[in-house]
Image (cartoon, rainbow, N blue to C red; front, top):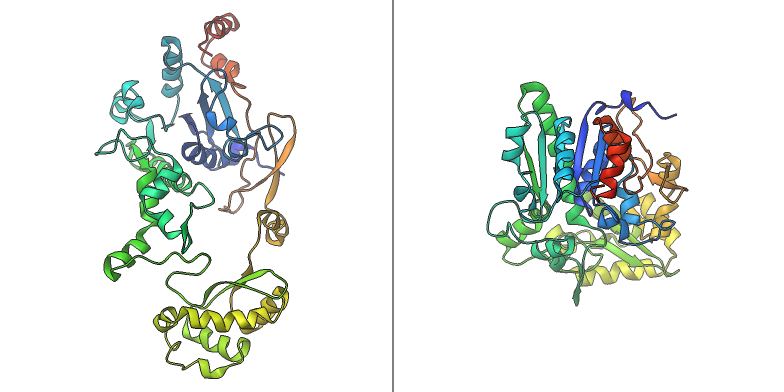
Length: 399
């Protein structure tokens, strides 16, 4: 049974978000999961362009369904005077304002942090940009794959012959997570000190943080980690190996104790433990090809289930290399009850994963994904607009 929103940790917090795409919607959806009221401001007509990224979920975008449950959608033309006035009224009642507008747009509209602090001292503004609101690239647009390229992530991902993008929007997700944690920190600071501090996150700097390990390796090792598919660049053996049934099994050796167990109980060759080519982690990486040949021969002699069973018995962490269909049917998700049904504008319910951070005694909110402008009339009525005024605004294209 779902808890009433009043019992959720962020009940009573109102978030107004002029958001689009992935990063900002991911941050605000997580606030909504915890009970915040999130009013999503969209363009009249088509709304957030992420609604049209694809049509795979009963006609709705897979991105939009993932990122926008439990929100209220209000359409406003923010280039019009009435639209701007309505936004100001919303901000006067809000605790948090999130925006990921195009470079410079927030400042031109008077929605920068300093301007907002003057008008709304208790409001927490959060800006999500590509490369920051200051600095030499402040005016550049940025999308997820551009940032993957700029941080060097693409140069680390893929096969030796070809780089590849990460298969998910990792820069957007990183920025959304830091915006979410930054907003929570700002809310805590306001509650304990009375000071409302602005939050700023860029996609580039969020993903740059995640690039620290290869950055250190490159700076102090003189060369960047190699691009070697499912193999780990700096640990061996650590990668996927094909088995007799054509399926791959990935496993990892993390220390010398595990290496010795692997040699004795899985490879059945105790002499490898102290072989100078493989006796240390660095030696195993240096002689990766020779080591991989030994491991590959062992795996090729058994099917994947037998290999995983043998590794389990040896105490070595391992996993099959799942495709997405296999992930959807994963026994951990089913066994731990991680799926909930969520309504979407198409009038059907689809399964969604509950948030990964479990808070004792708290059931996250998992409400419907809104249609474009679904809550416009309701929200404007709360602001004091009558039915006739709302119809005039709608006829004028403001809503």
